[in-house]
Image 1 (cartoon, rainbow, N blue to C red):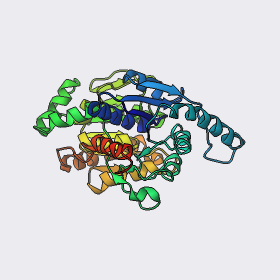
Image 2 (spheres, rainbow, N blue to C red; image 1 turned 90 degrees about the vertical axis):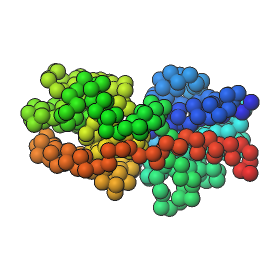
Image 3 (cartoon, rainbow, N blue to C red; image 1 turned 180 degrees about the vertical axis):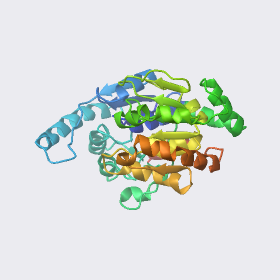
Image 4 (cartoon, rainbow, N blue to C red; image 1 turned 120 degrees about the vertical axis):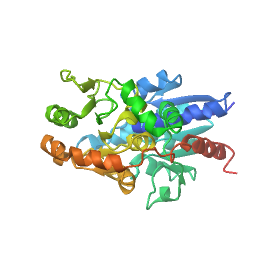
Length: 360
């Protein structure tokens, strides 16, 4: 029985690809024992148990992005998390990491116990944890080309997709035009009118929500319909004809298919899902971090399937003035989605098998 320990937590960008690969490995190796390590604060605390996998908690390693007193405590919290991770290595034949707070102590513990490591980097600019982990293993994979560093030589696997996105792609591939019209109807919208789908992640984005709240009347007056994922922690604006607001969008695949225009952040998972199912996107990169969100979106821009706009330029007046131009670009974009990430999970399974057999 093969025992695999997955490490990747905090955000959907780390958790969702890990779950996709875990499902694919379980399908290929039904007798395997798969578990995850994570923190109580991350999305993995909810998503991993819901997916039917065991989850072991370790302490979160907090490393401030700027100089602050908390940096003094970072080495001690890292040592504590590594010690907790070491106890999990006794039951692991392989560690598979996807970055984030959980992965760095997992990589160090695996290196100390000589447990094989496989790494997947979802972003176009690698995070600190995966750059560290890549020093301990040759078994690495990426979703975007990386210009320098050890990860520049990694397997180009793509980004492992959720099963609902994969299923929607396979179904829509039979007739993309009909699939997009049917998706609009399924969501309760008029299939003959343009539809915007805007969301800011599972928790929502106050900045994006504010722009829509202050522009929706003008957009509706232009005959444009709006599906708005406001986020679980935000209050939905009052209903209007042609406007739907939801705290949580359960069926993201149908929303992508239905939308003539997606407006969202450009996290790695979002970019991959837009590439697979959507037609055209306006990306508003998160204005914090190491700039990876803008880099993630550039490939779609090069395909004329997306536009990038800085958050400080995304205003109600800008959106109302530019919406028709964005919809015109969408109409010129390919009606079909992309299959570039369809086999990413199976490629990761092959890389895991390679690592388990000593790289032979």
